Amino acid sequence: MGRIVLNNVTKSFGETQVIPPLDLTIEDGEFAVFVGPSGCGKSTLLRMIAGLEDLTSGDIEIDGENVTETPPSKRGLAMVFQSYALYPHMSVRKNIGFPLRMEGLDQAEIDKKVEAAAQSLNLMDYLDRKPAALSGGQRQRVAIGRAIVRNPSAFLFDEPLSNLDAALRVGMRLEISEMHERMKTTMIYVTHDQVEAMTMADKIVVLQAGVIEQVGSPLELYHKPRNVFVAGFIGSPKMNIFSGPAAEALGAHTVGIRPEHTDVSMTEGTWKGTVGVAEHLGSDTFIHVHDTGLADMVTVRISGDISVKHGDTIYLTPQADQLHKFDAQGMRVE
Amino acid sequence: MAIVAQSSKFGTYGRPILAWAVGLLFFFPIFYMVMTSFKTDADAVKPEFLFFFTPTLDNYLNMAENYDYWRFAKNSVITAVLATVFTMFVGIPAAYAMAFNPSRATKDVLMWMLSTKMLPAAAVLYPMIYLAKGIGLYDTKVLIVTVLSLINLPIAIWMLFTYFKEIPKDIIEAGKMDGVNTWGEIKEILVPLAWGGIASTALLIFIFCWNEAYWTVRLTTIDAATLSKLIEGNRAPEGLFFGRLSAVSTAAVGPIVVLGWFCQKQLVQGLTFGAVK
Image (cartoon, rainbow over all chains, first blue to last red; front, top):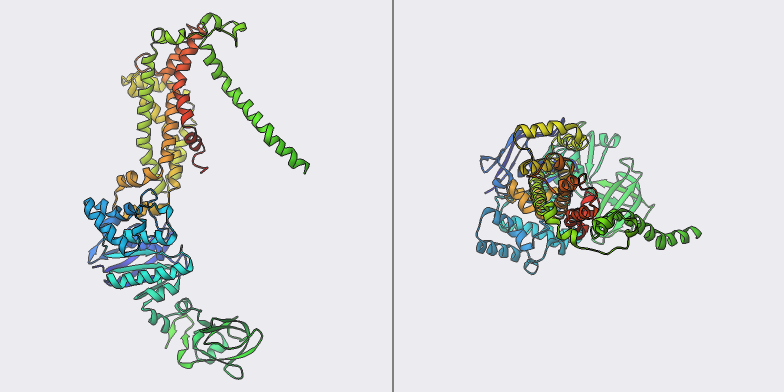
């Protein structure tokens, strides 16, 4: 079990309030991702759930029990840190077994559990090495192993993949998702990378300046962003957002259209512009268009290959049913 | 080009010569003391025997009966060891608390501790003596251990604090998540990780305790007197017996010089306060 409820939680550092009153429920077995730009309070929120950071007010419940005053180790949670936070003076075996030793389990049982975890994480060959002799990816596996053996009611991940190179990151992302499918344990995952959020989450919590901008499934956020911030944050390449006469012509203060929802023609269309850069990925082409009168640069994503080059004149037509309209406050209007 | 050649020439010859000259200059008093300890008292004061003399071991052989050396040595060992242990026992948790759970007052507390080292010891000499006599601790090892611990605690805490600061906070937090209590964090994580820093701090504190003379001389008479007291106490009445005095002085500084020699690396690390890795 691992249902986590935050009631009216706030956090201040001195005079500065980093988390204004906030309510959030994470259901048992859910993969929740906290995402937002750096400094948005997502890590602070995670650390408050972990118990590493005190609450200024409000309370936290895990499975119906108020744990606001409970020390970290008694909350039944396991955490994976961005820096891995392995114990450098202990072997991999000792690192993974450490929480079990602290629980007071006997050595035979610790060995059994450590080996089972090592097996599932492909760490069997490295059990007697020290962390310094491991690669970044292996270290992260050890950190995950140390979390798994405790059989926690929820896993907390604090930007676990940011220190890995791009290729490894994709691999570990899949492994963590796979692990969630297999274990069905609640996971809370903090990242600033919206691709990680979109690919892994059951539920995404978008934060900005300590405020929850929107909570929803990845596709809800993609199709129905609640405000301009979420619209611009979720999706890659970013949504094109513009206001002014062109937006008013479409009946809204601000209008957004995703790159993949814009049709391209060399001869006619709603907006005329000049090609800046065309990125040919084979499967897709990203065209960055200038001088449209909408925004500094409009990005379009075309499936397949299209032969355009710098300086070409191009016409763009938004798919009418895919337009996102926002009022003067930046909130979505239907 | 000329400048480069010149400076490299200085690097090859000048620097080692300079280093040796400075080294010998500092080492000379100790060398002189050791040399004198092998002279008879009569030879010791004669300039013609400055470097050329007939060495004798008499001063060393008679040391125990002349000066009761072992009693003083025993007191030095006991007080220095206990004071070092006590300092570390208080210093490690204190530095831990300030390094990993700093409060708004932490910086001020650290500065305040350092400021106690700026106080002239002589200013509190008489209060200390009256206090010690008043509570009946004058000339006891308990008093010496307490005083040595207290005067060295600020340095120990500062050094340990600097070493502990280098340990990533995440590791301590991982420990918290893994279910260690505060004592466990110190024992299982902090001490093994900062072992080098803790060892060099302890070593330095031990040396400071061993060498301490101001308080040990003034707060003892016989029972708790250390080797510092022995050397100091023999200065006036036996001023003419330079040979004997040198032997007992050599025997007093000997252990610490040997210890320092073997632990050079840790000491240098300790003295740079963890600034050099």
